[in-house]
Length: 224
Ligand SMILES: *Cc1c(COP(=O)(O)O)cnc(C)c1O
Image (cartoon, rainbow, N blue to C red; front, top):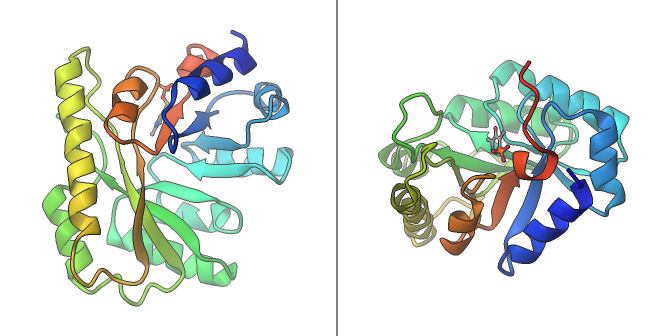
């Protein structure tokens, strides 16, 4: 796999306004450095510990994206440096991010993860849960978080019609939230994080602003 070529090919295929997050989970430092030297700066990891270790080992101008399920007790490790947390799936987690962000004297950008897939196992809020949460008033006093959009993962499937339908649904929900009267001050709907190696072209055409790609850049991950 030529990491630079893969990044270039994917980037060139994306519409304006859609950004590539290189998913570097399980990849050794040297392969991330290869992408860094090719000029790439936005990387995604799904485990707090691995994210922290890589942050410490690599140049400090990297934007680190947390894309995997995050336990509340791990937030403190990434709060001092994380660029964007894509995978916020509970009010409790938002409250903990707010608390740790305050300690680091930061405002941390977050995406709310929405369950759009058919599979039962994926994390995330349902459409009703998210609308209730936003309108409940419980986000109002979280002054150290900034919710900038939504994230979703489509069903792992070959069925392009199904995948397209799920991404379309996420975009529709995004627009619906954006148009709500009296959105809390800490919500600005700007980003939709959707699309992975096998479905990013569909996601991009459905309005994704951030695709999260690992396999199509580094090859198959070694299973641990
Ligand atoms: C691993 C992962 C990706 C990247 O998946 P690929 O199929 O390797 O591109 C994207 N998003 C999340 C949340 C992931 O955990």
